[in-house]
Length: 251
Image (cartoon, rainbow, N blue to C red; front, side):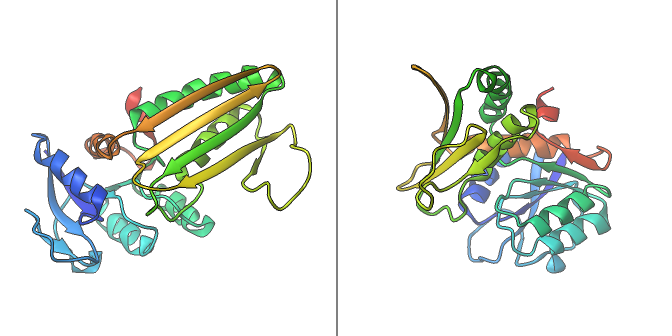
């Protein structure tokens, strides 16, 4: 049985994870952390980790970048891993996360969907072939109107995955309105759309001469991300310190 502390338990994703864990015979949420109180959960909910004194196997974090250090200190002091699903971290915070992974197991993914992680591999294969053939690469991501960070962490992760197999020679272009110049051959354009209740769409466009190849992933429910997070939470305990990702879980 995997005992979980859920940070961001009273948010939309937190409640989806709660429902999935309720139906899982091999996992249980023993405490939640959330600045928002008042929701009736089956487990105690604390406003901060400083108030929490329960023994757990792992933390699932589906919240926001604020108070990151408090969570890292809590996990390091108790030698438990973190499934880090939050996006929008600063460069300084990413350094803190990387340093923490030298002491505890960290599972970090900008997108916990198995489908996204599968197409990441497909994109790497496509990028090697198509970039060399002169195809331009563009990413268009669409999310609901409540999402505050842009571009999405997933869009950046997809770009990074392609750039990795392209020897990191490509630059990212987020806005074409400020410059009137021709598109550079070695750039990946990333556009963000925010509107309505779109759960998440990521479209990758390889545009060549007289032909276009598109690879697209559409999320119809937040449950796909929650399922991945719970799978990761059951995978992480007893792992050695280090940084883990969905490809480790899927291998």
